[in-house]
Amino acid sequence: MHPFSFTKAPSTREALEAGRRGGRYIAGGTTLVDLMRETVERPETLVDISGLPLDEVTVTERGGLRIGALVTMSEAAAHRKVRTTYPVVSQALELSASAQLRNMATLGGNIMQRTRCTYFRDVTAVCNKREPGSGCAAREGYNRTHAILGTSEDCVATHPSDAAVAFAALDARVHLLGPDGARSVPFADFLLRPGSTPNREQALSKGELITAVEIPACPRPLKSGYLKVRDRQSYEFALTSAAVALHIRGGVIREAKVAAGGVGTVPWKLPAVERALIGERPSERLWARAAESAADGARPLEHNRFKVELLKRTVERQLRIVGESK
Ligand code: SF4
Image (cartoon, rainbow, N blue to C red; front, side):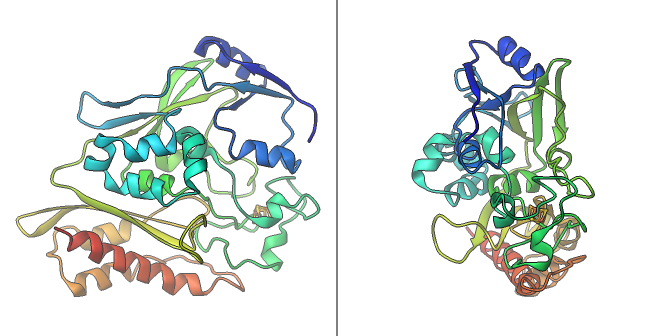
């Protein structure tokens, strides 16, 4: 591990000031400390923000839900309001990591976590995300777990967060605070596709801090849930996943929100699937027909061709589970 200085921010103002000077924010530390041990990350200054007042879940004036960036994954998953109004978020969180990690890791850190591409974490391998311009070992290497959607010549790594898939499906917004003030961005614009700059992963300016994730109010009743397909049943990242939320009234699907994980370089919203559902009556044929477009645009690699069919089946299964639940 490389030497670094550590400071605990006593206030948001002082945290932002330290961030402006180039300090790296840390809260639960469940990803960053690992990466520092492996010398993948070498920050010179860590700014501990765990004491800032960003740890509440509140109902917004418009009836949405605002989850503070420092709410831990386990607190968010167990929160009554999250469980009852957006089970897809609770389920995505509970299917992530281990209980110990969920007790430490914060929501802000969860959406900021870096890829699990093994070459990214192996400092002897070439990796454009870690060292821009060095190459991508995964393209010609073993790429079974890598992305099939949103890839570029320079990077094919998946985004690992499950909660981010649920937030993308629900059209959440990320609230930010920086030296120039507060702003919020749609979740879909916050995490960046790799393009030719895979080292740039979020739409953050220097020193900006995530303060909260806001889920907009949805029409009621809303049925939702998260399905994660992985090589083993716990403590494993998704090969494919599907976050689904459906508003069904009078026997007709009025609103549909669907996103996939484990397949994209960012959480992958599925607007064609949503369009195929809206205005239709739930049926076996509908789930299969809507899921047919889930992998449109996929560019599989040598070892992950199976993800194309697996993604369609994952989406179809989760549409059925949510659409036919009581
Ligand atoms: Fe690095 Fe991305 Fe290639 Fe993995 S897929 S080796 S993270 S550039």
